[in-house]
Image (cartoon, rainbow over all chains, first blue to last red):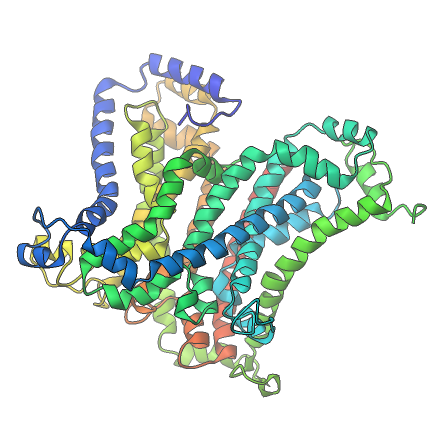
Length: 308
Length: 310
């Protein structure tokens, strides 16, 4: 962990840590016990996913006759069947069409607010941050009724939504997700931007750069690490978003993957091997993101809880 | 335009002496700043704050959701009905509370414990951390799906190993606990991650001083480290409360929040997209959620802003 995050404090902390071990606070026996306990717990924690992976490759009738605590019956059929019965091609496409625009919009809009909060010190700054942050924490179910009713009322042209209203359209989901996620991103980004030296703006202003150019050409390139971390986090969060998609889309073929699980339940739960294969398919995109961008994911989460 | 010095500017100069005096901005710059704040604010007010207000208003009405003229103002009747003649309400409150207490007692404490141990240099620390927060990237709906492999009556691992015949997701006596264990699987890693970040910020010399004084590991943690991490402790507290209030995905995927899995969040949606469309009634439930959460949101904002100022 110390090796993965590069904060300015790392070096000194590593020093301290080395010295700490030197003073003999952790003795050897306790270290061994800790390692064993951790190993056991880690295996328990990994087990559900590994169990799903294992059974997703096994034939249903084989496991029915031999039980699940057996070996063998290898097959790829579950994946073929889950893919076609669950219509995952369509649902993954829906997820993509919702997640990508929502993440881009969230990061763009919150970087605008964050820039103003960090660059200028207006009296309303705290209030503004409060409006966004509190929105992030409100339970979405509490807002369901007005949002649902309002979207039913708002017409959209045919080419934007086949239903003719905001309800049952991807636009609704993109906007709702954006509105809810902006608080967290604004908070993290403005903290990050506040660490940039104020002098860079002064020299930019001497060169005659307006506010927009300062934002776009000066600040944005400098906050790329924070943007990358937040993008990773938001992709997983919006991909995983379940509630709004479930209630705002009433047609099954519009569902993104996560809320499509709703309908798959009835079809799949009679066949556990199919559940296993379906789970792995749904988990795969976020697992790839997780393993490829693990560092970004972790730093994104921790940026929010401590000061960046 | 150029002659008006708005009140904000003078105030600002007076309050923040560290920031240099802002020169008066051009009209274009001011428009840009206005749009930068304005567009996101309009979006969040439109989709979060106005609906919150509308929920509050509608909670005093009876409405089937069709014509606006059909709104009938009934005062506090919905609240009275909810607490007296709506059977799933008290079970839902009870389940939400059990959810909260459970999250605190098991996954939160386990998460803190894991963070404290993994914070030190230890063989394979990276591997353990990965194992614990792997479930954090999965959606709760998917968690419910994956745990079906353990909970299924005729094909589940638990019943096969123990030779039992329990419908873990269906039996109203046990399904809440089954769902909670699945939640805990995901929640532990999340808490661990937050605490690991917090522990990194703890000054190492504190520990050293404690060690020199002869304090043991456990004592050091409770008397030195834990108090220093007060902000993180509070943030975790708020997150746990909000998460247990928002809990919805898992019960929805298991049985739509019925039969032993009633939660307030599920009741709200049942009153809108379920068989009955009782908007006023559902809104009153929504307001109850909002009131509870607003207490904790206030705590959260106060911590964040205090940190911000220092």
